[in-house]
Image 1 (tube, rainbow, N blue to C red):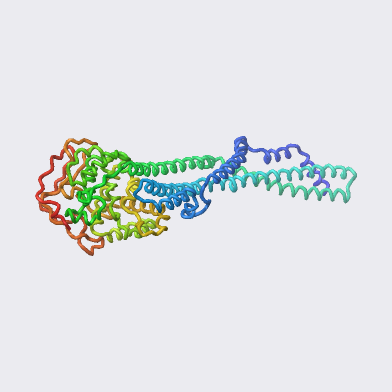
Image 2: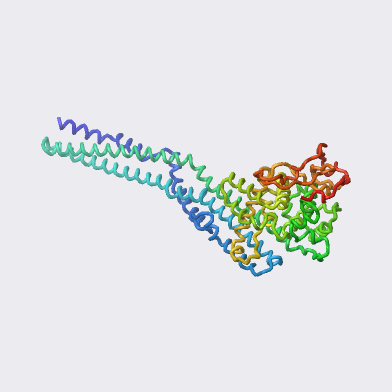
Amino acid sequence: MMKRQFNRMRQQLSHPNITSRAQEATELLPEDLLQIEQKIEPARRAAHSVSKRLQACLQGQCGSEMDKRVKKLPLMALSMTMAESFKELDTESSLGKALEMGCCIQSSLAKILAEFEITLEHDVLQPLNKLSEEELPIILKRKKTLQKLISDWNSIKSRLNQAAKSSTNSSGAGAGPSVSSAANKLEILKEEEEEVKRKVEQCKDEYMADLYHFSTKEDSYASYFIRLLEIQAHYHRQSLGSLDSALAELKESHSQTEPCFAADTPAVGYYGVPLQTHLKSLGREIALPIEACVMMLLASGMREEGLFRLAAGASVLRKLKSSLASGSNALEEFYSDPHAVAGVLKSYLRELPQPLMTFELYDEWLKISSLKDADSRVQSLRDTCSRLPPESYNNLRYLIKFLAKLAEHQEVNKMTPSNIAIVLGPNLLWSQQSTGDPMQLDLASVSSIQVVGVVEALIQHADTLFPGEVDFNVSGMFMPPTNIGYGEPTLVEVPSPELPPASTPTLPNGEATSRDPEARSQPASPEVTRPCPEAVGPPAPQTTNDTTRKG
């Protein structure tokens, strides 16, 4: 009986088709998988080498938080050096202004670079590292395991063949203990062979599944490198935009030689004097240069590309500034140069002894910039606005509502709330450097970024922070000439002939009366809205003067 079983096993092992089928099933892959298999190792090497070289390009500390990364960047070190350098210089000198602007822009570029590197790590470096260190090595390890199992299987099959030959020789000598021992050995080897074969088939199935998975994910792996180019393009656009804005403002400031007015000239009441003094002396609610410039820009500058960013000629700026300083409202010749008008408005804001957003609230404004929650930020902006002096509140509200209208045309004029904030923010809020505290100058670069963020938020939430419409022609003094024809007509609200006095400003929480110019009592006659410039005629005679609006 045992001899017959032994002979059957020997015949099975000696059958040539069985061995060839087993080898074909385990060692050979379909043609498509063979092609995919050849891509695995090159893909791993590419992901590994590119990720290492890309990481070497980073200037910041890999994996660090935003604040820590910015502090370690060479650009921030350059910014701090510039801040240290202009401490002993006259901030009104051309050298002092150039260093101050350089300090701010270098810190801005450092922040942009840090954001770029953090995005690069998250979207490109981490996926590439995972691909080269985890995903592809798993496939390659599975391939080695399969090769080892196939080698073991071939070894067992070779031992089975040798055992079969030995048993044949033993059986020829007749029955006995040697035949029984050979049969037992063949049975054990057969069981081992079946076990290895099962492992080979299982490992092969898993390996084929890995290859198919890689083929389906190959496009997504390629997208890592496309994402790299997208992030780089965004970074360079942001950097170029910041540089263009800062350079235009710096050139404008550097090229201007402001006229020096004598103490007894009308300019004393307009430029370089406290806002409250200017408003009280003229009985105005909105500063004359602010209202005049806004009215001219509403008529001919809303669709002008790069408004507040591109510099105008120094001679035109001096002439317009002199006209406003003399109290003249004959400004027709300046409607054709909105960049000059924007430059004069920026100059007025910067020459105020105290910024429009005040020194007292400087720290409060900067704290708002660190708030992450949008609702909390808006509420803090509202609360801080409510603590402004009435004169500052009214003029800031007037100006921010205008800037929000300007941003509505950003598709044409390219002035987004962010771009507007970059060029106007430093003219609305700055630190009180007269205290002599060196830390204020050392941190000027960081605070400049925070100021820009706050001003941008004011523009974005203008309707929430300052509800209601604004009568930009609040004094009724300024009407555009009928012969200008720049772009589409701009609607200008013309006040009624009789206006009651302005009321006491109101805090947003309702604790006092309204600061809103439109919250004053209105006459029963309907408001007149006319298209400007084509359809507006000469200004109607005024029955009341500005002194009746003195609040």
